[in-house]
Length: 298
View 1 (spheres, rainbow, N blue to C red):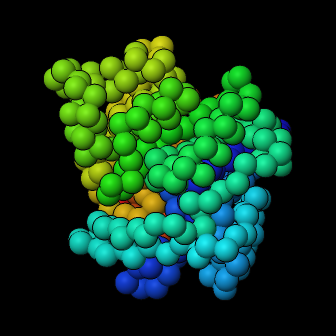
View 2 (tube, rainbow, N blue to C red):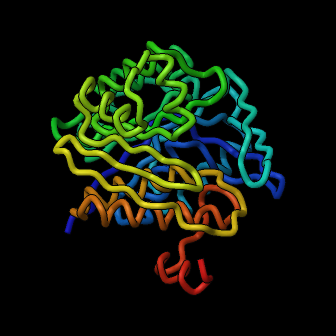
């Protein structure tokens, strides 16, 4: 069986955690976990012509992920991550390498073959990468999954940007804190979170809307009226860096492989729970995550 091709467009960086640096960047994390769940993943990003950039390229290749990682004169991105009870807070600087991803024919050819493409708001804060990503999204296959994992960070977003990306998306993922912000931004009157998610689905014609509630629940709604809700497994949290991205990458890969909504959702929950028990966004996978969680009593 041919593996589905999954692309991530956007940031690739070093998360500077208290225990050391780890590979990160939400789209790149998505690609890693999609790859671990049977997809053929590609990272599209940019790093500097420096030692940190060299190391990032090495880590991507070590993980078996294909890539088009451009090299440029801006510094490789590093993000200071502080943890409060395992919950990360990020300090993200501007004008780094992935702010300058260049539109090329090579990228167009790759995007036109993809079964799924992941993107978010952060890397589109710069005009250059913004224009590149939006232009590339014009070249997707008609049935490609376009996965908008919003990942709001600090002041690196706007209503106009979110609206533009929702118009491109077929899948929209957000967490409960982001939904609260968007309720006000879009003047959403629906009283329940479920109805607010369905508001986005109706307005933008989305195939899936995914709402995650951290340590409590996650819910997925489809355009056909199907839904899936599960409680979040209780685990001993190391840190939650990349947990949401692991959920997204797993869900996308499993849906592309033909899993049912509930099976793909269950796999995504288990993966995110496992990632929370590990350090950083790219932990090594045990042979079977559900067995690992069961044996750990989680």
